Length: 360
Image (cartoon, rainbow, N blue to C red; front, side, top):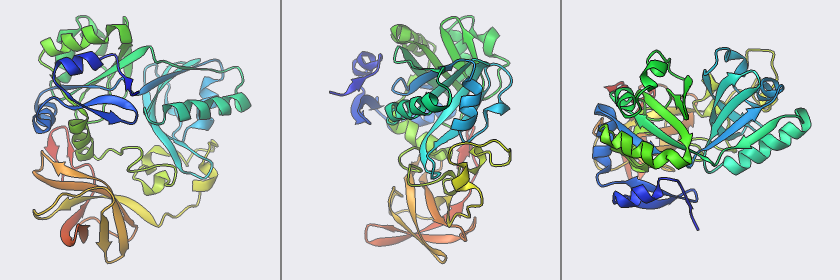
C-alpha cells in the first residue's frame, strides 16, 4: 500500500497521472509536463511536496547537537527564521541525505528531509542524540503538509491567496522563513525560481491548494519538478549523491564547512581528501538522443558517468549532471554513449538556468 499525501484526492480529481515515488503515490503531471515546466519559469506553479518530512529539534542542546551532526555549520544561523542547506554525512564521508535546517530559537530548529530517507534519517539522528544530547526532543511531523509555489509571480500569488502573508514575507530574504498564523512560509525552493515553500497543518492542505489555484497558480507534477531542478543544477538524492559518494565529488563542496575548528560527523574522512572525480554539467551538442542517468561519459582524462539527465524545455536540448575525472575542464568536448552511438557534448558549469535566464 502506497503512502498518500493529504492532497491525493485533489490530484485525482484534477486527472493527474499518479506514480509510485519512493513509496508515495504522487502526481507526475496533470496533462502536459512541458507546459507545467514553462508555467514555473514564466509565471507560477505549485507542487505537492507533503511527502517530505519535517523534523523539529527542540531542547537546550539543539544547536550543539546540530553543530556536530551536520556538515554545514549551524553557527551561521543567528537570525530567527534563517535557513541553511546541508548534507548529513556518515563517518566515512558518504552522503546520508541532504536537507534544509531552519533556526527558530536557540532551543528550537526545524529540519526538512527527503521522503525516501526520512525514517532512516530520524533513526540515525535519534541514535546520535541518545549518545550526545540525551535530553533532546526529535519530533517528526506527519501532521504537516507542504506546498511549494515557484515562479517569477509566485510570491505575489501567494499573497493574493493568503491575505496577511505579504506584510510578514515581502521583505523576506532567500533562505529564510516566517510564521504567519498556521503557515510556516519559507523563501526556498527546488526550481531555480523565486517563491515559497509553505508548511501547514495537513487538515488545511486542500483549502490552501484550492486558494492558490483560484489565484492562478498552476498545479505541477514531479516530472516538471525534475526538469526544473536539473536546469537549476540542483542535486537529487539517490541519483547525484548517496552513501557511496562524498559531497566533494558531488558538487556540494560549498555545503561543507571544513574551515572552522568545529568537528562534525564525516569531517575526518574529508579533511585532506583529494577527490579523483567531480561533478560537472553537460549540454548535448546536437540532436539524436537524450542524456540519461548511468550513461558513460568518455573524456581524454578517463571515463565518467551521468548521474541525472533530461531534455531541457528551456534550452530546447538535452542536459545532464555527470561525475567525471577531476582533470576535465569547463568547455571540454566529451562523448556520451547513448545506446550504440557516441553523441558529442560540451562540459559546462551548472546551473543551466536560474531565474528564467539561460546561463550556459
